[in-house]
Each structure stands twice: as C-alpha cells, then as structure tokens.
Length: 358
Image (cartoon, rainbow, N blue to C red; front, top):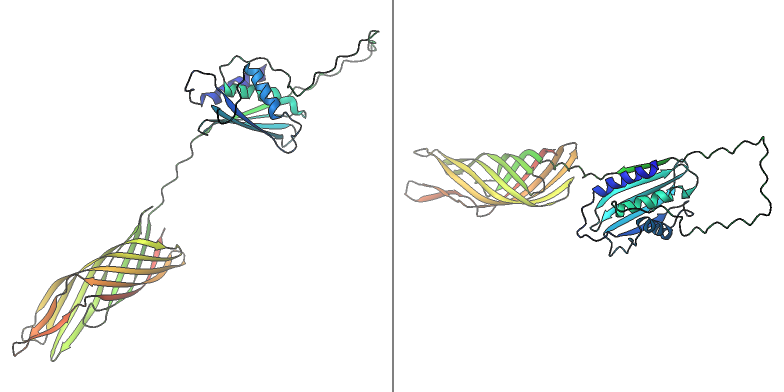
C-alpha cells in the first residue's frame, strides 16, 4: 500500500510537467519496451501493455503515429543484484517530460511488474480511476490441486512455522528535466604586431618604414585591422638641389576572407590616410610644404603562431593613391622641373612579430 501511494505521487509529479491536452478526449500513448541482456525472462512488451490497459480499464496504447505521448522503457539486471527499470515519457513533439527509475533488490524479475504497469498507467492518465492489478496474460493459471480423499496430516507439535519472506524494497527516483546552462559568449580576439615595412612607388626611391598593426576579431564577425606607419626621410637630388620627403600615415582594413587557425591566410581591403611633408634644400628660397595623402589598399597576409601567444608573419600589399600631387620647382630659366609624383599603383612588403590574445 505504501509503495502504491508513493508511485501515485511520483507519477503525478511527472504528469504535472506535461502541458494540458488539447481536447477533452482520453489521452493515448505509444509504448516501446526493451529487455536488455540478462533480462530476457522479464515481462515482455505485450504483457506489459495488457497490464497497463487493465489498470486504466480502457484501450490506451496505440501506434506512435496516433499517440499523444511516447513512453519508452527498458529493464536490466541491477548493478548489485535485483532489477532496474527506467521509463521516459515525451510529448507528441518529442520533448522529454520526465524520467522515472524503478528498482528492486528481489532476485525475482516479476517483483516490479505491478509497479511498472502502475507507473505507466499514471503517466498516461494521472486522473484515471485505476483498477487493481491483474496477473500478466502470459502467466498461465496455476492448476487446481487434485481432490484429496483424506485430510492433510497435521504438522508435528514440535514443528515451528516457516519464517515470513523478507519485505521487498522498491527504490524509485524521478528526474525532472531542467534547461541547459547558457553557453558563455566567445571572447574577442586581439592580435598586435610590429616590424619593418618596405614600399615601392610611394616615395622618390624605395622607402622603409616602421609599422604597427592590430587585428580585432569580434565573436562571429569578420576581422578588422588598424595601424600606422612612419616612413624614414626619403631624398631626391636634382642638380644642386635636394628635396626631402617625410611621411606618416594610418590605415584601416576589413578582412572578410580568412583560412586556418594556427597558420592563417587572410585577405583584407581598406583605406590609408596620411600627411606628406616636403622640404626644399639648396633653393634660393627653401620652403616646407605638407600635403594630404589618401589611397585604397588590398593586402594578403600570412601569420603563423610560434609558441604561446607569439606570432610571426608578413604581408604583400597594393596601394592605389587617390591623391597624386606633382612636386616640381622652377629653374633659373623659368621652366618647371618635376621632382616627384606617386606611382598610380604602389606595392608594399612587411615582416611582423606579434602577440595573439585569445
């Protein structure tokens, strides 16, 4: 009686997690029952289904295509003797509503058949008026004893009554599903590198600069590179006159294409903006002038993680200047002499050492 009351309460908790039925009709279910290795002699699916419907007093088990609920169960030998059964119930959409475990220490597998039928019946309809358990249909009725012509001999006076069998202990556990913990968002990735930059077509002669570059990669988004370069003074001589060019610039690029992790190949496109200072040396009037520079860039970069956060890499770039000022002077005869004009397409190469902060 106590086990039956506990099963009613436990099954009611599982049923409370289910949504209400969409109509006022009686609820149906499909039953899938598996006997694992070692439990082949336990109750089968047909006998268990008949016991459940006997409890409910109606036909409640149908095919999975027409069922309101899906009930799946299995039975197997217990780890330290006895038997262990697990039953799970899901709604028509497949969402698990609850899981029950029934175990017994009895060496007889049939000791938990009534508990299984009761638990499944309550999962299907917790508000139903249940009938008393009946013996499984697979069990044949015991033959009636033959008529006796003489009364059975009385036990000797010294014989003591047989000891009562030890009580069976039924252990039941109910698993209430909880939503999984939220996955923390992925962190930002920051890479910073510095090194020499070599350029051709940007200054009168091949130039060299010190460059610093930072790559920012937000979670689930494309990477962005920002940085700057300071070019070493670059001079050109025309006759007795010298013109010195000093240049500093910054850049920003978006990198929509990237392949690899430890070794990464990426392509970036962006813009550069800077200021070019020009000094005349040896002219009758030495002047200093500053000009704005701007251009669009396309870079291909290869970066390799060495060890820990240390990285090494390099890149090739093409720059198309948007501002191409022509620098010239007027000689003593009044003729304009061109000193320098940026190439319509310039190239760069850099080699960087950096760190990667995941």
